[in-house]
Length: 171
Image 1 (cartoon, helix red, strand yellow):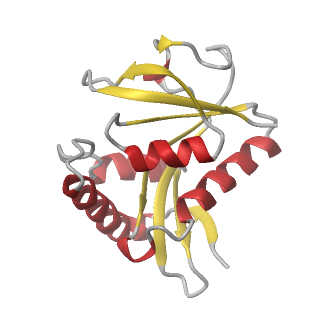
Image 2 (cartoon, one colour; image 1 turned 30 degrees about the vertical axis):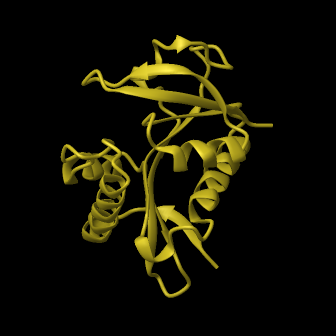
């Protein structure tokens, strides 16, 4: 039985280990995403402080994955080359910084994270989830399509990096 719970400061080193594995995996796929020292400890500590950092733990409390989940508006989502499914002033969920341990990749844990976040949105009567990913991250794009996310257009991060933006209506 997996649990999706708020991360604590004591989880930081394990979270950073999993993020390091994800960075190496992306590099091995020749994907530029996360190759510039991001996400770093200060980003994760900020997520933990804001109670927006989550971990997936197994029955024996092993840390399997990490993700940031929030319902605060994402500033880089204000301007999109394309169109969101919902109005820009609507409340929506956002997932960022998702990484699954090498040992557990391909076992449905990312799907589990999406399901948990979507359930949270349903319980809080929030109608959509938005997410962005690197244009070369075909694994995440495939997962998003499989989970019913719609491609909405292109957004640009604060450092001007291009990302593909997706949204799903939560019913």
